[in-house]
Image 1 (cartoon, rainbow, N blue to C red):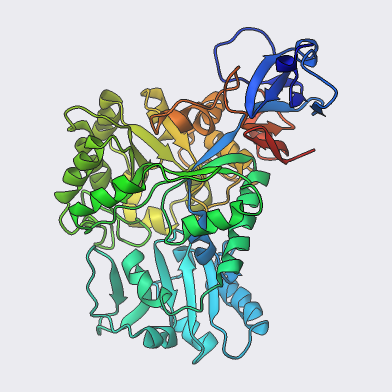
Image 2: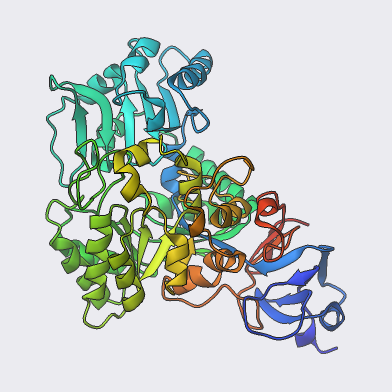
Length: 534
């Protein structure tokens, strides 16, 4: 056997899903120097085995291209997930019980922190009265599940000097009651930052270990790569510190923010960041936002929500967004834009469609309320989409009693999360979690994308069941479309392809959707390097 025909690693399974049009029924592959060297039957691939080849036999396991979570915030997520986990709380009583337990382990001078709070737990308007009753003079700070808002106790507001009359370069705001007093609710990033800046900080070493742990969790959940929709201030330093002693558990593509209200001259800074990289991370693309969230009343809707909110763009001068988009496109920089309300989605889609000669791919994130005419704009102009199926299945109730549905009303809520219609219209659709908003659980997302209900609750009614997508389209959302929607090629297992691999104990293309959420991750491989598994 010649030296160039000896593999570093051979992986055998019950089936290899290549995500290509190749013929045959492969069940094994060989890896050399971090790339796929051969795909075929066990007998064919075994010919690549030499004395030093690592052989991994997964039995009946299914081997797939490495899954990509197309929307994550791992560095910011360290700050967004500090303290008590409130994600399973469904009432203020639940929240109080979890926070009471958290208080018991804190020192006298410690802040009470929590994350994953749902606005659905408040019977009326969101306010900090229950929090003040619980903590007294101790400062407390709870983040809402969508990462776009927080609730601060009165003592925390006082420490941060928040009065309620603050103004911002975007439409962030400090919520106030009828008497003009802050309610404790801080809406959107700039307002949240007022209190965030006085929180006790984690040390750099704590952040290094925390970030590594988050990325390891994502690898164990089935992902080999993540598209990070931000570039946190110390992200590069943290990643560099990790790579000084070990490899990253998953590959990262990070897109720095062009924040609403930012001077258009900032485009040059973003241009200069492009291509900065380490072994398994790179800076590529730019992320921006056109609006906030429906739950907080900060989305941009064609008509106000039923509380009279969500009436404007996050950009105080939205006419600047198309100018920034065109400037980035002129430099060949792909963009991803957070757009949730129907007016915001329409504004972004039309701005992309109006670019005279696109030199980059531009993708719209979330797309929660999509009218038919704007769906046509996506399809006609080749605009890419990125959505998070579990935002629908975890946070919306079929009976319309959740905060999101109540704000929109029945007619607009019926336009929510139209994944099926987008796919049927031929729109490229990438899938993700938006961690830490929802769990980075690859099998769970694949299942919920098809079922349109929580996969672990078989008795739950569906939310817009006709919008479920096929198993193949769900897998595409983690593989080929993950790359196509950012203007790149990838997500296949073929000779010469990067050896990023996810293996499951179930075949996601043939197993009923009701069972896919229970699939076990057998293996994740990043550039030929086994991260999870044997």
